[in-house]
Length: 348
Image (cartoon, rainbow, N blue to C red; front, side, top):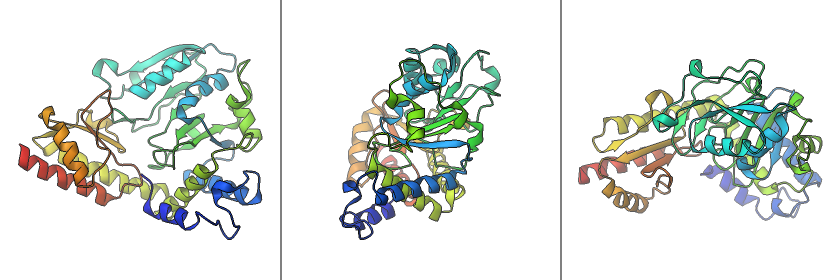
């Protein structure tokens, strides 16, 4: 979901951006018009995330999935192994890809508990020779979230923040690399943002394609090739929208309230259940099941009729999943709860 204000703003500029006679989709990525859009977007993102000056911000293609390979290609830096924390489907995919390039030490996993929690850091078993530690702060499919930033000492911490970035303030300086696909809290699909500490750029493994080297993109201001210009533009409008909402502190207050409201309703209900450890529940993705799974189809059909879309759970886990990213207004959560209450009354 994108903020209505952003879509309306983009619509007003669709045919002619600021009197230049072109849509943003028609601009040269090296022309002064688009360069100004790109520079402002990066400036605003640096401001709202308080990104230190010794970090590069890259606007890339390939989705977060490409980062599963780019991270080991660029961060092994002569080492043979890396630590990964396995807390769900996206962690597993990152681990599988990293194994193509190095020895992966799964320092902790919650697989035995069906990925319903986050392993306490006191139980993690690190490899002292690991090049980096990788984790997924929010598992989109399972609805499990870290509510702490792991401490990894001098070993760079890498985070796939695709479904939690911009939902609250974070201390960027605690990370070596943050990457995120845009299509959750940033903008349309097709854009991936990488925030990387400068000292980690420049020692990609031999044979790394130029397009998979962070150095290539850092040296060319993310314009070594034609970037996803329209997605970058929309992302910039979203950054402006966040600033106008009180920045990440403002977003955190709204997001926490939305999530707590929905979980409170589910927990007191006789029909619905959320299986995740309450200490590890996601603010962004709320999976839930019905007491009688035979009612799933009816629930989804009636929800759609009520204007509540995209509630079907991921095919790997079933049930339902409410994704309540930044752009979902609190009124949307209220509407979902009202529908769930009415459905329960009629079907309990």
